[in-house]
Image (cartoon, rainbow, N blue to C red; front, side, top):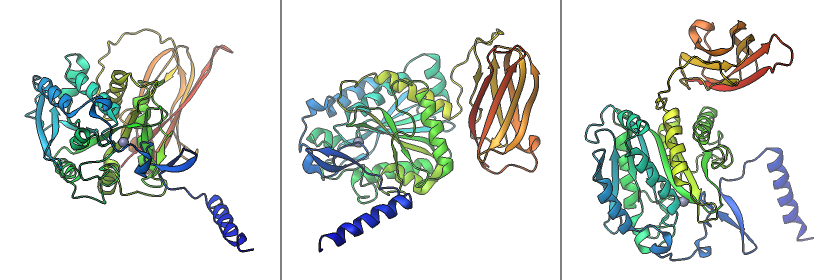
Length: 429
Ligand SMILES: [Zn+2]
């Protein structure tokens, strides 16, 4: 009898959780040596008795000396300025690269911040960052456009002491800097990066995108997406936009946007992203990227870096590919993502059709109510673009939120291939 009561209580708790659709805490679990072990967002056990105490810098693959050598190379570029945002526990500089067309004159530039190597063993997150730096410093049109529009602040090795000491996850004071952004704000590394973020956020051009580069113990590349329950429905859809925008450049390599979702129980007040959300909400796209930690598929860092940079530019509505306009009949149907997105009050929607026929383009709210008909007529094969203006095309004005636009193209000739596609857009007032 004595054993039944606790079991009954447990059963009631579980049933209640199921009934009320309770979200379990954001931590993932794994089975290690037959035990269920709580792991952090990078997939490593939170209880560090499961982890090696020391990993040699050689095994990690990229040492502090490697960084010093690379700094000397990067320094040769006219597009780079190198300084530091502060010192580590043991007095090593937290090196910062400022990359822009003129790194000494960045007043009008839009700001992207990247930091890597918080967890010293997660070298792959740095290798992607390294490839991002290489692309940013190259002489092609894309890099030039990025540099003339943006400034990238990059801290390639945020935990240099951990790298030198061979600590897989912690700094010289034995603190996991990633998970203790709030608990140990006076750790020199945390204080330095927080001060730098605060400085940039209070400047005329605050950070728009912040990427926190890690590697995950699962053999997968993904962004750690924050659930709408811990952020907001709007931010959740912005994340979808952002991550899928990057993924479009590397569909086979990066997991879909909502493959790993955290913050289901609210803001955990642990990570740099938590801090951004707490202070600046949806104004900053602050996410952790996880590359593949030492597995058979690890690699393609340049492909990933290219996808991230193109996706970030698309998200910031910076047009990087100037394509030649040629008037040819499109070979396939295509409904493009509206631009800009989010928008207020104007956005452009474009699509193409290889056939002539009756076309309708309608806008719906999240409940599926039709709120506007933008096109309802016969059109020839070709490319189309229409300007959707909330104040002009719809009265009374639509509220902020998610809307859908749907194209339907019906050919005159039966079975010539009708086309139907829907995309999401965000009105942000
Ligand atoms: Zn990590």
